[in-house]
Each structure stands twice: as C-alpha cells, then as structure tokens.
Image (cartoon, rainbow, N blue to C red; front, side, top):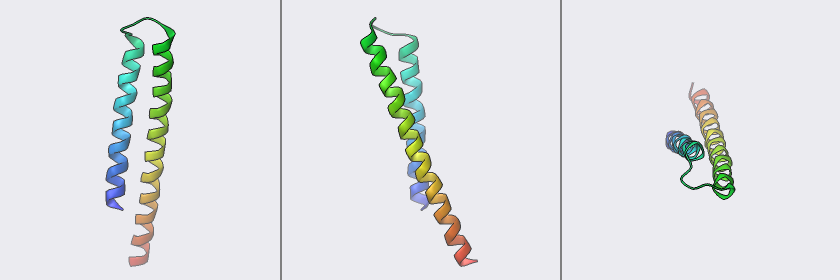
Amino acid sequence: MIHALSTANQGMKTAVTQQAQSAQRIANPNKSGEDNLAKEMVKQIETENNFSANAAVAKTANEMLGSVIDLVS
C-alpha cells in the first residue's frame, strides 16, 4: 500500500510537470497555428485525467491502509 501511495505521488508530480510544460508552450508558441493549440489542449486534458487517476489511487491506498490499521488496533 505504501508503494501504491509512492507511485501515485510520482504520477501526480509528473502530471503537474507536464501540465506546466504544456501551459508554457501555449503561452509561448514556437509555431503559429491552431494545430499546436489543439494538441496542447488535448495534452492539458490528458494530464488532468492522469492526475485524477493517480489521486484516486492515492485515496484508495490511504483508505486501505486505514482499514488495516483499524484491524490491527
């Protein structure tokens, strides 16, 4: 369960980093055109979904750990 929390934490950190990089590319585009903007908007949605999925893993692992602690007590 601790491993799951660690993995989820790393996944959320990665999603935040990717989100920031995508936002930077939107704010300072190298090429003009809607194609790049569309790709970056898709990337924004992907990173949001990745973060949400990792947060759900962290929540579930935390709940499981709490249940184990309750059983031991």
